[in-house]
Image 1 (cartoon, rainbow, N blue to C red):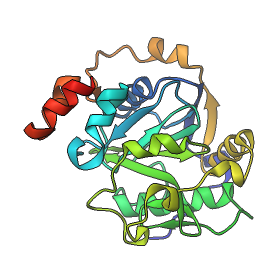
Image 2 (tube, rainbow, N blue to C red):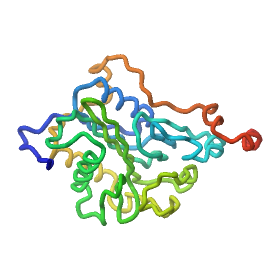
Image 3 (cartoon, rainbow, N blue to C red):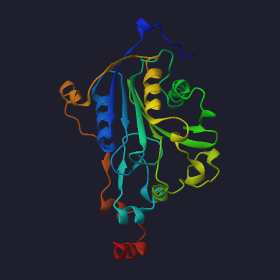
Image 4 (tube, rainbow, N blue to C red):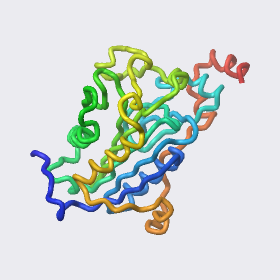
Length: 267
């Protein structure tokens, strides 16, 4: 069924939360709480996270996805989030955008991974209108053949979340902490990170991207801005989030025995 837009007076309501530099773990824990305990629709935009951190999907295996020895040596946090998807290293150059919706919020949208991805790509068509060769490729947002946005999702009985880490900028050195995953998208063609990803800052200014994203969301929803500090008072339900930082012991346990003595000498 085709996804249709409603006239303005019938647009579904959505709360907009704009954040600046909130730690990514705090953001993930907030999103899971809103997904599981709220009945409202939400758009959460977080402009950067203070310190570099690696974020893995719920089923990610550190030894297959990251250079564990380097991560431990340099004390880089590794977070296992509550959604699926791949692995990314994020920092102050990353812009995060999340949509948390009831299943009936988008008319005609079936609450399955690929239809949600397709809907999101249409929304970002509005954001990147006129930009160089923007498209959804497999499960990534790309300019041409280079990835600039990675996506993850979780779908519950009545709700879903689709969140994206946008690489507005990044440090090349940070990408060395990541391995090429065994289940990489076909279009990657085994390229290393330097040849596979690109920076959004070469396409449009940071503030323009955020403003355009909000404007695009307003074509689908009626937005109401809510400050971050008001959410706690609105939603007081106790909730135990599943997104967590992996401990050094958990990471060390993934290293082969022959490498552990080398790691202890390096530390």
